[in-house]
Length: 198
Length: 244
Image 1: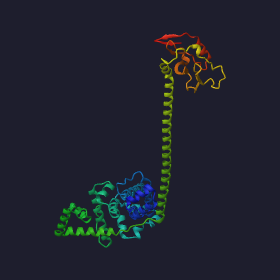
Image 2: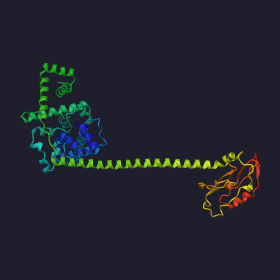
Image 3: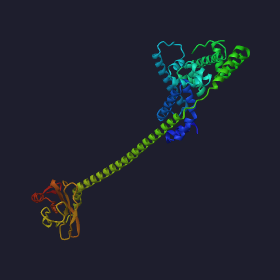
Image 4: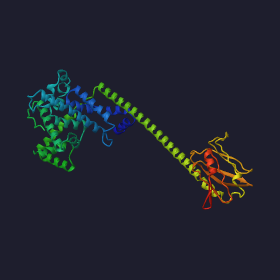
């Protein structure tokens, strides 16, 4: 059964197995996107659950079956993630008035986490250096990389979702790749200046 | 290398170019080492990103979501049952109301028709009696019976029509739904001829009798005063009809 059939089975017949199948099919990508954006497992858990609670309750009203179900879910997940980051950023801005405006958001987020939460930043320290570098990217660049990687979105879709032009989305991707490349090179002993942040 | 070229290289790596643009980039790569290095470098970085691991949500989070889905499905099922019940009830009540309305209209119409026919009966009988009344029929031949004072089984609410003459027979009618139209029919059989020749107009007091040789026979219907007044009244003739 494809996604549309499963969605219909859940909406019309309350088929919980159909919903379970939908969740199993897409949960990893959605959770990975959220986790890679917020960098904290507890927060990612909360946002993931909030996303699916909205999916369950709003599926009857706001989901149009003409569109892809996963695209609709991704939009909810993305909005929930961005909302959380904005709230967190506001909190950080208020609590740390001396922060440098150019200072990496992800680093600021790390600074504000509690020690136990910091332990959960597995991809920053214990996981791969790749996740650490991606976590170091500015939010806008990281967002484009994640949406492209986990959701396999076209740049047109990314542009629509993030409310920017396609060229801006492409530019952010390009800067993200340049920055990552330099981070990898630096890690391998080469010194580069960071590319201009998009 | 220009910024526009960089974007073309990125689009090339991301497979976002038209075939014509692909050819353009490949030609540039063949002629320019910098372009080739740029494209290969981007491709290498993207390959690293492709190795980004997928994370699985914890089991307890999945469980909570599934429970939420179950609860929502059950709530929706209950709501749909209630809605179905009410829609069934509505259907039943609308049908019952429609049937009741049709019945009411039918009964009302039937009663109205009955009343109209009952009202028109005096004229009809007046028409009928013309030419059929026996010539020897006189007022003295027709007995007047006051039922208001009698203990007849017919009772005061029943109409009794008496025939004049020995061969006459009596007929009892059911009371009208509207006593104001206290109209009676009188049949008389004299010498084997059946004549319907007289009506009494209830409270209106109008009685019709046609023909000179025909006598009006007042019919007393539960009101002795009315009957007496009718008996005392004189007879007038209008357009050949005698009105008493």
